[in-house]
Amino acid sequence: MITTHIDETSSETERGLMFGYHFGLNYHFQVFKKGDLLVNAGLSLLNRNSEYARSEPNFNEEGEVVDSTTSIENYNFSANKISVGYGKGKSKIMMGIYLSLNTKYFDGKTTFIVPFLSYSFDVAKL
Image (cartoon, rainbow, N blue to C red; front, side, top):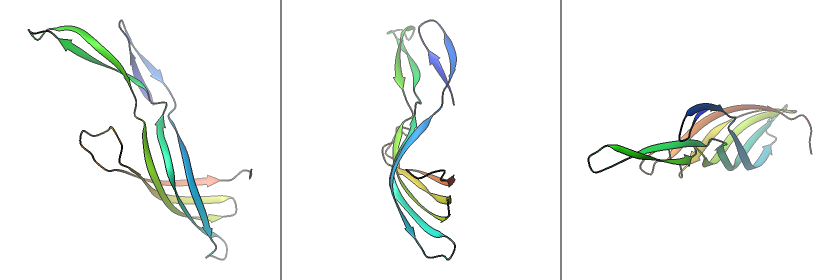
């Protein structure tokens, strides 16, 4: 992820890693001989660490730029997560959707849906 940092005198490029937090309930159905059907539902807090500076010009009555206002914005959003998958041993493959109703990406109120496919491997159990 590359974001642009803007201050009063210069513009420079910053690089950062966006991350998310996932909270959910998992259930394993033993319907296959060698694996499990997996069902997951939960809440995800996505695009954390996505801050950027936004600068907007201020105009006088003649339409000339006289100043600018800089504010810190971000691409954070929260989404409900629903997924199904297959697990065998420590390996899991899941597919599902993130469903968000509170995003700032659009001007009007719009449902934001993001499909996903994931693979995971459990190294150890806590």
